[in-house]
Image (cartoon, rainbow, N blue to C red):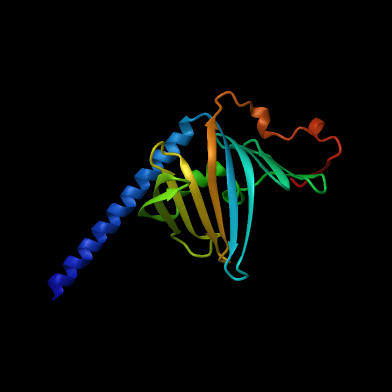
Length: 212
């Protein structure tokens, strides 16, 4: 009986180890593909689901990415980040807030940070193949090794054809699920660094609030 139990435990550990190894390999390829792509422009849909209220909100947006820099344009706001400074322009109030976000703060918004978040502090598990927007994807689940963080679970879908991120689902500690689905993307190697900085001349009526 003990021998059978030990055998079962050994097989379980082996399967778990292979799953984690496979998951890391998939994410490594996707992260490497992104890092070698230069700059990328992508359109996306973000769905936020609240299980308590059973409400779902959804909006479309566009993101420009180059290394750790990004610009995100959504219906009610535009965010720029040049690697150090972040500008958030609220369209209704025409107010711009300037901050120097911490690494933890960037986890919730930066595409490049999300793409590489798996490297530290998470257990990885390969969850098989699925279909996202008609494309075959490999699904990987990330669960934090320590409790008390901002996220309880992250699920990443990687396009099998080109190793690009197709969908990222983040479940926060309150149970709200944010699902970011990439609808289309294209590489733009010549994207200028000024794309990732707020230009006051383009928003002459904006009130600038420096919170640094």
